[in-house]
Image (cartoon, rainbow, N blue to C red):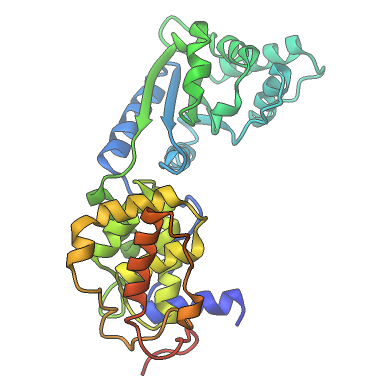
Length: 355
């Protein structure tokens, strides 16, 4: 079965219109937490008031690129009001002139000569010509701008203004390590109008994110997948509130659930997904064990729901083997094995619908 057939069979089994946990940062699946809403509000306020420089910081997978696309979609829907250029990911080895050249290209300019002076004059003329629109340059992965000369160039580009407002907004989305670069360049950082730091999702927000994306994917009625509370707790313990990692685990768990023909996604399926589809990480495994805590020892092994119970692992010999010295990892895997071995029957097939 090819990838397309497998994807269509999964959607058919769960009654979905589209994959709810797609890997791309589609604005359709943007779940706005309170923090995301506040960040968007502050961003739009800074942009619309033409206050200059805005910085959004966050660890990997906290939703920065999704926020960027949300802002970009809003701007491109109103071309008479907004004029926007985007540098998706600056190359770390860029010189300041390479960065300037990238800005010129993204604004669609074609100076007659390839020089610093010609490029700066072209940008200045362009911004003055379009002073009635809100000109904005957005840079994603701004942590790649780690040279003092690059920030000094951006300061010069953004320096043009009228008595009322800046002629160019700069909006940066960056990893947390960019803080060190900003602190080392006070001539630039003191000009930052707003800075917002995105924090990881809380447990309740992880549940809301999963449910939201399922709804966006068309999950309704009795065929829709159901992520049990134990599954959500395990996902949150592993992903530590990272939306990207949460989505990745859910996507792989959905595939496993379809393979064994169950719409109830419990702790067993999530533990199995983590064991089989993520990189080995004893520290994260220990976090899951700690998060499950007493409840993991007190509860009976989770059921897989009313769908036919299909075995998730071929034989006991195929179960992960653990070095006895790694007790936290062993606790997690013993828990996963205990739950998974409750499944009986044979491997499911995602190719055919249930009668």
